[in-house]
Length: 150
Image (cartoon, rainbow, N blue to C red; front, side, top):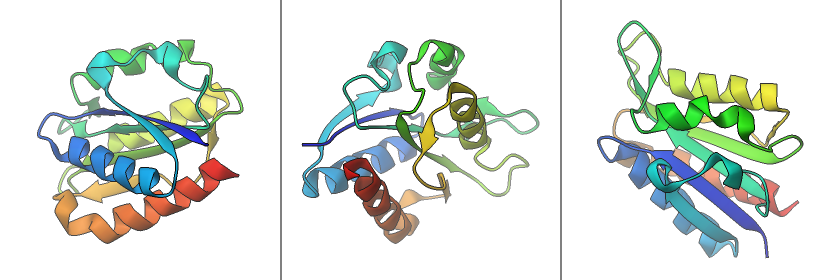
């Protein structure tokens, strides 16, 4: 059975709700999912026994790109992750009215490239209320699930 690790940071609950939806969909396809808030996760868990690692964070800040406050220290430790050649997917919530829409996703994507991780698809960027993007979340997750099983 394929195994997935989902780590998310959420301030308003939007990113958490997306992570929970992703988890449910992956479980329905037979993937064993570990869902963790970034406050309880350790960078050393990334890769390892998991077939795919999924990272999610919202973006904050008007002029600079900022991670959700709990995700920032985790991001700073990512160089310790053993993701070389490991499958990774990224998602995030944001607001297109800000200059750096989903900038945290962009930073995660760049970091995964530096670490030699294999992005399985285009990162998911959600504008505003995730409830309005359920079909996008579902189709993205189904694609991620298929790539995790390969």
